[in-house]
Picture (cartoon, rainbow, N blue to C red):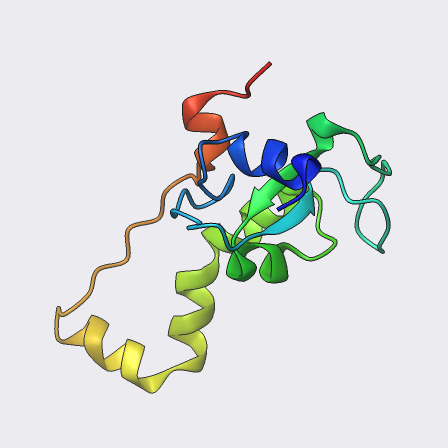
Length: 115
């Protein structure tokens, strides 16, 4: 691992900045404020503060979304699954799962941003 990647990896002690999963050395580098794309209103830069260690699932799902837009997409995941899955509808009907809407707080927001 290059010193630059190591510094980003260590930024949150080897955890994904978003979901908090342990990365175990395998990670992608995400731009907190996207550098390009159709959704961001402000373009991000390639500096340390804007670079986040991310697991592949978070980085691929976030793609070019601005953070607040992505947060709203995650918060709506249960509704999306419920609309498109008869298995989810059945599990809800039989009380096997419960809908519990809540605000998403990313890992880096819970531990603070390092200086």
